[in-house]
Length: 256
Length: 256
DNA sequence: CCAAAAGTGTTCCTATTACACCCATGA
DNA sequence: TCATGGGTGTAATAGGAACACTTTTGG
Image (cartoon, rainbow over all chains, first blue to last red; front, side, top):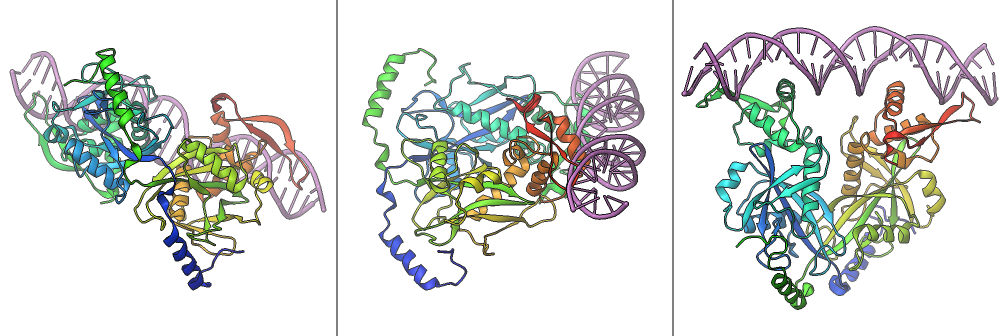
């Protein structure tokens, strides 16, 4: 018995496939439930934050948690993410990416629930505009534990508490590790900054993500040499110091 | 309404949680089925390979596919991977890691099936020992499309065909991209080489994964400087050339 | 003028590349 | 001895880190 080549007895095979599928009942066996959870990351000042929602029902009622929800039978994972984010936070059209899938047996008290964790990157300005940060949403602070780029993290809610519902603290830690690893190779920081930004704005985002200070000159040259930013020829004035040149994301290497 | 602090009205909350969970029926709604699929990668000679199994039933009967199966209600994802690999290939105790989750609505003709793709790394010697490469298993050849480190790939089965069942070709491509990205930062290549190896053995593995030649001296120095290999003080003799020094994985940075 | 923030010049150092060369063995 | 694969020296280069310095604004 060999694998089918293209066109080889395709009719008979197709009939067998069709008959099999007609008789197949995929819901015949018990199986895990599937959710998506999203760590929406942003930078406020010099600290990395994650958007948390208060759980309004059990399990974990009253605890802070990542926005999430069950995956519908007719929607892809990314569609589920978009739907959940719009419902729980009002945000839409932001950069999202898949992170990892968490499937330990005891991670949800409701039963067997496997979650496909995602992360999203949004400028803080947009969150403040759209999200009601008093109506059940907050921006938890992510504190890198180590002095350099390593775990562990502490996630600190608005009232100083550190616990999140389910295994959501582990998801946040994985999200931070992921964007740290991708920071220099993918347009991560550009998603966290307004359309127009100064190089020091951008540097503050890099520093918040990495949890350590960067050399100003080295950073500036590295970013400009990358060809990922284009100068706008305008300056940001009004502060009590020398105006900084404004840039936007784009240019040679940006893949636009 | 504020999030619960530690110990605050814990009894009442716990009662509510317990009551909720007692009444909760998680199987009440239709939902996707969940599988795991594994790309078992290895290096034979100078080419990267992936272990394929022939599908013995519909859908895709007769096509080559990655080993995979449904996730049980009482097993974690990694347990499901181990079970599936032992059942379909006889391999066990190898290095596996999660890759990504594929959840497009139409990816499986049986209905809505979401798969958590994994990859595994095994030395070719072990596959030849354990797996029956004539009884429904084969080592498909992975051909990098670009001249450097980029996609696309062609996956070539034993009889020259290129199609895999479902979206498994995309999973293999994602697996190769992942191990390419991790090659210099994680012990990827060491999983693909026997316990005792020469530096040129190791270099051939790196070259197969990257799809390009590496400078011998640069490679040798980089690996030895990493502290990840320790010389055994013995040599591999018997070839018709100068015997090469044997190494094993371990040492300072190996995290053993 | 001074504080504060923006922006630049220069030096040092390390990792990577490229390429040429020497060494040990079996036939 | 020669072919084959194992192993090394060295110079050129690129990129990042460190640090001191100058410039431009608002008060």
